[in-house]
Length: 324
Image 1 (cartoon, rainbow, N blue to C red):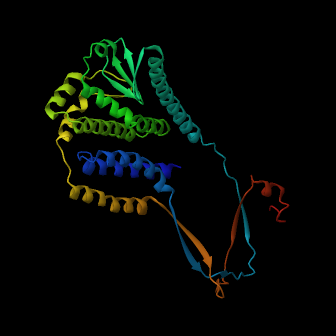
Image 2: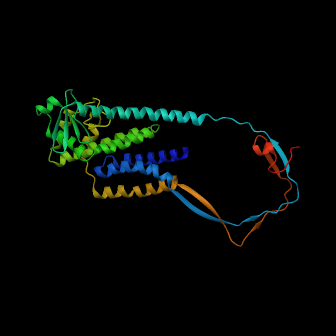
Image 3: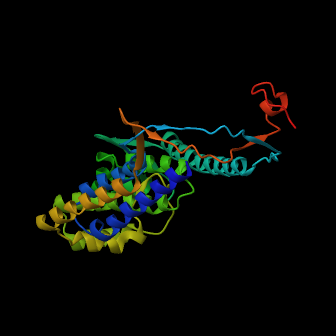
């Protein structure tokens, strides 16, 4: 189990390093979305791949001398290993902590949906909150400040941005990585991958707004006006100030088709390297027919060590040997 976790973590590190170096700053956001989710699955599946090879060996026919074996009795001390119990206890407490955190955030969003007035807008439902909040989205629910919404103070670009999150079901990706983080809470890389997944969702929503005809500089001013470092639910998408600079840079980026093909082809050697390096190799021995190797008949001494604490050593009835 420990070896599997180490292999899986190593695969995840290399996949994520490739993303940060070659993909994050490109404009192929749809491909990046599936890459990030796919790399998580691939990291868990690659160590399970088994390559089996068969080796033929000749059977060995041993020839023994008449030298009687010498019996040596040895007592072994039985010790109890508490480390597995301690490690599983720590792991269980970590799973419990992150499970409580996840369901508390989920329950908080559900309570907001149930207790606040709603305004249904075609496929999406606007949840109107009394407190001042940054617009954020969870599945088809868009959380907005009630006063701003009723006074029509929320720009159409911001609404389109949030509706894109809902339309493209970005919350599915977040729920997926949150559940994996519960199981693999001890791997800090999941925190950075979750940030990259949510940042790529922002790239997708920004592109949808710009493709709808919004002027880039005007849209950037709107984002600055509506962004802040205020806390929002970790399961929701919001306009966050900390990612604004990166988003402004990517908005102006256009990746050529040649660059897309080149970076995509680089995945092939990476995938081959990971499969070769972190899969399981199994060697099965087959016995060759019509051939045999005879062992030497010059065995001078055979020593048999028997644990006298074992049942057979105590009863001494299985082999017929007597203790001397």
